Amino acid sequence: MALILLGLILWTWPHLMKEYTPGLRGGLGESTAKPIVAVAALLAIVLMVLGYRSADYIHVYTPPAWGQHLNNLLMLFSVALFGGAHSKGRIKQVVRHPMFAGTILWAVAHLLVRGDAASVLLWGGMIVWAVAGWVVTNRRQPGYVRPTGGTLKGDLILAAITIVVYIVIVLIHSLVGPNPLPM
Image 1 (cartoon, rainbow, N blue to C red):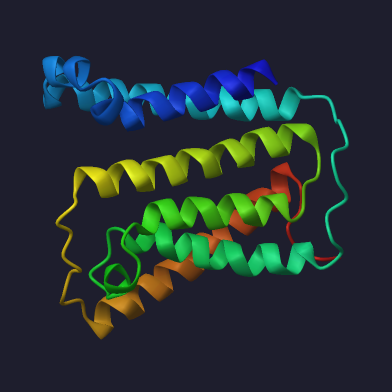
Image 2 (tube, helix red, strand yellow):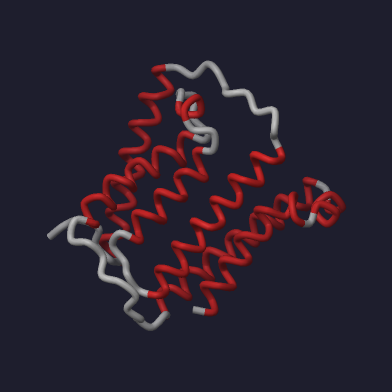
């Protein structure tokens, strides 16, 4: 579980560095900071995955029987929100921070099907990061104006990409486990 915690810290700090260590981030310059953040994020993901897969099972709660079905639905919306952050659709008119919202849905969905300590640490940590990021970003941009524009074509492209990515995620999960489909 130490690897999960280290991964969460390594994930959180670079993403919130502008707010909490602005002198360091400002001193690096964007051309230096972006690759550092990218490498730190990749290393963080590797640490979280290795830590999660190697953690002993410690029971915390029993997920509800219907959790798997709601998990699959929430994951579909989560994938759409992740894609919506960069789409030409209208999702940003409805959700100010689609990636943070997608992360929260993704984590909640996984907590509906996993009741062990490693899952609570990993997914709960991602929820804390996303909420903190949401708050920090809102503070950094107090004069936010909801975007206008976006097209039906952009929405349809996002829907198609979401379905394809969701199917790929389900197939990968089916291969490496746990299988997300109800049996």
